[in-house]
Amino acid sequence: METVVNVKHISKRFGQQLALDDVSLTVKQGEIYGLIGKNGAGKTTLIKVITQLIQPNSGTVALFGSSNNSEWTHALKRVGSVIEAPAAYNHLTAYENLNYCCKIRHIPNADKVIQETLSYVGLTNTGKKKFRDFSLGMKQRLGIAIALLSKPDLMILDEPINGLDPVGIKEFRQLVQRLNEELNMTFIISSHILSELYLVATKFGIIENGHLIKEITKAEFEEQNEDYIVLKTNNLAEASKILHDQLGYRLKVVNATDELHIFTHSHEINKIIQELGKANIAINEIYYARQDLEKYFTDLVEYREVYHVSYYSSRLLSSFSFKRFLDYRNPFYHHTLIRCALRCCGKYRSSYRYKSF
Image (cartoon, rainbow, N blue to C red; front, side, top):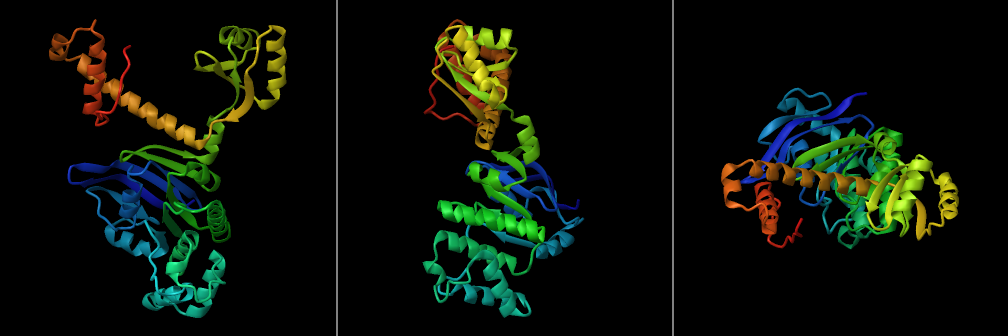
């Protein structure tokens, strides 16, 4: 399978801010690559680097096997993109906007190409309606139509479902899937709306504070994230003993007072109810669940932040001068240590509150 995008060790700095830090990723032909991250994580900056809208401070980008900057620039002819907002003229209709783009790109058989493209994105019946009067969903589809005129092999879309209503989101998802299946078009789609991205993407890259912290295919994600049963009971200790020691289930205590997860399949629920009933253990709630992409993302990001705080805390603990001025028996020591660690890794805000250990 051909490598469409190969990003290696890309870094980008804006003044003192490091927007991208040693980012590497690979996108294969036919993949729908979901670029996940919070607002400000570096998604748009990375997309702008790939499309040469901004230049990186270090690292390389290869498109369709390009080996130098000249080939990279030439390969961009095979790329369509909608970054930040669709580029169209407010006073023109959908047809007029596409016709103008065909003229400046010297696309032959313009009328036929325009009609086919409008049909593909579902904008054939807009008539004389001007772009300024389009709904947000229609604007997004026209932006994609403009990018489709040159029949790209790679489509890059930056936050394309922001502000769309449920109908618009569904129509966008169906359009992407159709282009991918019928034309074998490769996609990079950035979004922070993970529930929708999960429905369309085949591979995910998670970016946080300019770092690409994880790449995982949808198949790998589904294999790694097991089914589980959520059990809520006021008698957690006895329930855990029965479920683990007698029935052999693997457990995870989520809330020490009343909630645990049982890693098994949904058809085991009746058996669990029966066994706990025999022991007179009251069940407050029990249901089947599965970890979704949003929880996977938040857990990964939170783990990374805790790891960084722990790392800097241990560095501070090893400092003789730091030890000399702090009393280990004073609860305020813990607050000070964590505040200093958070400052070191750039996470501290005065609004944080800490509890004594």
